[in-house]
Amino acid sequence: MFDMVINELRVYTFLKVLRKTYFKPVFGDRLSTFHFKTAFLFTKESYPSEIWRKNNLIQCVIFCLTTLRRWCRMHYCPHYTITGVNLFVGKLSNFEMPQITRMLSDMIENLTDFVFNIEMDEIGNRMLKLTGIKPSHGQTKTRYDITLGILESCLKNLLEVLYLNTTLFCKKANGTVEGLLIAFGNLMKSLMLNDNDFLRDTSNMLVKLINTMSASVQASMHIQTHQPIPQDIYNLYRANLDFDLTSCRLKFASMLYCTGQYEEAAVELDHTERLLHPDVWQFCVSSGRRQFDPVNKFLCKALDQPVSEVVKSSVALTVIFLPGEIHCVPKHLVYEMYRTFTHADIQQRQKVYDDFTDKVIIESIPFLYYLQYLTHRKLVQNKRKVTSVEKLGQYINIHHGIPSGHIETALNVLGHCMETENRLDLAWGAYATTMINLPNNNAAVWHMAIIMNKVINKLSK
Image 1: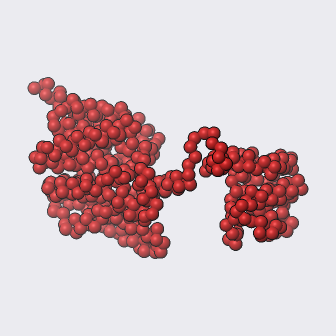
Image 2 (image 1 turned 135 degrees about the vertical axis):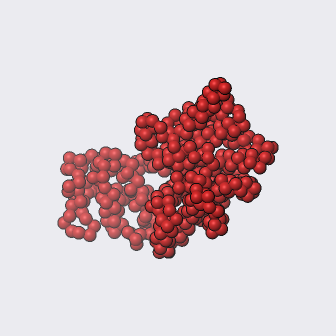
Image 3 (image 1 turned 90 degrees about the vertical axis):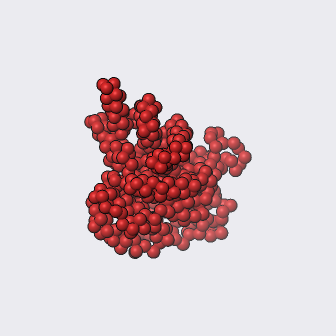
């Protein structure tokens, strides 16, 4: 098989497509790829090498189908390397052979008609388009469009795996500094064995993501014990800010806010906002959530860049805080770690296999605006504070119609902004809206209960 030239490979691939499209629905895998491969090998051996040309593809396929039809009439399919073996035995029954023979005869005589009806990769529509006949349905995707679709799918899978592996890593470390160091050392030993450029590139991405989470966990421990955060933790944050465009920078800014370093947080947030551009892909990490669609321009650029460069320059990943990072999270968002209340919540969580209900998870852009609001409020920069809330409101208006990602968390932080401004009516409206979007496992239950308590206390006075 490795000795085949490109045109022979095209014929073999064509045969596999025909088998999967027309024969597999009728005979399953009992008439297998191996039968077609054997017919191809015998045909290749029997016909002169000069016929295997690109402009003779259809005829070569017909030769192979003719070989297989002859065997079906004989009820005997020889093995290519072992004499005396009938490949039909134990797979196909004698009464099925006439049906296969009829299908092969029809295909040999009208192969182009069969090609036009192939739905796989829209081959039929493509062939019709080449003939000048307009396809009967839909718009045919080009090879380039399909390539971009495959790229998008691969990027989604890769980013999901990176986040899931980071979460598993921190769970194994048990949230302790010693555990993190041991687990990280073991990880580095395994990564050093990689000699593949892609694996090395993605491994470096994983290291950056783990480093950021490790810095956040360690900083949270120091905040909990009222100890100053050592310089090496700041260095660990800063060395890994460029994992993606936003999420690691926002984690750093969140830690600065939680430790009262408001001016430093404001500088980091302003810098992060300046990095945003129209081609940014906001990526949601969570099963069962509607993803944000990347723009075509982003995918076109991603074709020609290493994956780490694509993520670094144009991907705004979801910000996730594990329980071990709880003291690096604004207090209002801590409620997101305690979203499961009722038996219905538990059932819904198991149904969608949602492993994010004990974590804080929020998209990068709404978290950026929320952190800006909190920071500017502490710095008594009222105009900038109002601007941040307006941006958050605009974001929700754009994405609320067709909810993508964790829109309920964005609505919850908008409600907190209104609540902080003592606009309890608007805050209640935001929380009620998010409960409509997500009635189960929603921290809005806490916030609505707090508002009710405030109103009752006010009335009792």
